[in-house]
Image 1: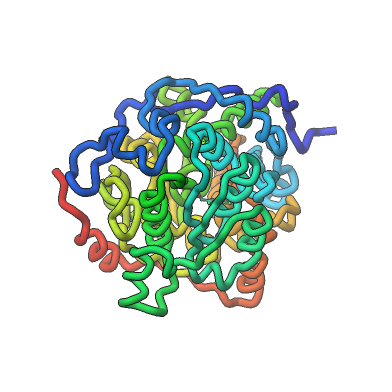
Image 2: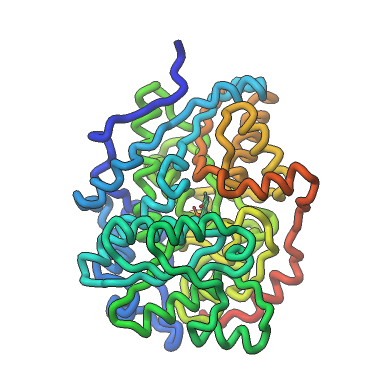
Length: 451
Ligand SMILES: *Cc1c(COP(=O)(O)O)cnc(C)c1O
């Protein structure tokens, strides 16, 4: 019998996170203070982050120990399984070997608890009582609610209003784990009230929700902020995914030619890809592809420059590929991929030609998601379907070329709380949206000019 699931024992959960900053040929330019536009100092960040995370944010140490208390919670769902997608391979008639690392086994259904748990831990250690954060469709908010619950922290979540109204199930999950959830823009913060004064019907965006959460955290001494993607320490925590996948592939004597993941802020991509990209930097042949929606084409159509992380311009300026911090992405179903910017690490590696990027419209992603669900049985998160689309295309190319290739992708989450999106697709209600170049230029023209 051939193996379908390649599993590791709990003893084999990685004990350290891998920090790619130790190996990158060029490090990203430093984050700048939003007011002075000078490089930020660690103490500028202490009003919203614990020192342990600030240290990880700037560390160039290759391996960083995972605390025992974090490992203990990781055992609830880690190591996550690596699947060989035999049924999908057969459906495609490809000579390629397709593997997927399934992060939907976490209690929140995505990779996000891999970082929510250590973030809650370090905040607890620092004596923080409460976390304020934002969420789009609810994946990050529910992961933070879960992690806060594990460590006895209060969690307040600003949830993008359109999702708050249309996608109630993750709000219910957050509340079940004890969190308080506000629709954003809310009347609870100055940034929220300001937006509602001008536009009472505003449906919110991730950028606005971040402004609200940062303001909440900065104005209360018992409260810190937590971000679910983009920042270096977040990507660092996600590297447990790629490290496990490497061990699992070694068990079946394989190694990827291509590593693929969807890319919103870049954390699941960095998480699965960076441990392999380390080998590439050391000389190994490998392609790593970040896949984004064509309605929010940050890497493929954005500019590489300094931009804020939020709409109001409260966060530090980070060097990144960006569509402009006031970019309003259309309401596609892959809510987790609707962010104007990207991780500085992913951006720098893309700029240096070490990784690749690709974009797809949502209908071709849902088509891929259905092929996956009908062959491999798991219903994927709409975000993950972008990785599946790219993996299928690479497998079909391998078929055309008659090449045996090894393709690894990250199935970043399941779609069981996103079934309404499948309902829309099945009833022909989804359309593709290419974000017009003029609008991207317009949004970028409003960015601060920094030499
Ligand atoms: C949030 C999310 C993403 C996108 O975030 P990244 O930081 O780019 O990984 C992808 N997939 C799922 C299931 C998510 O919840």
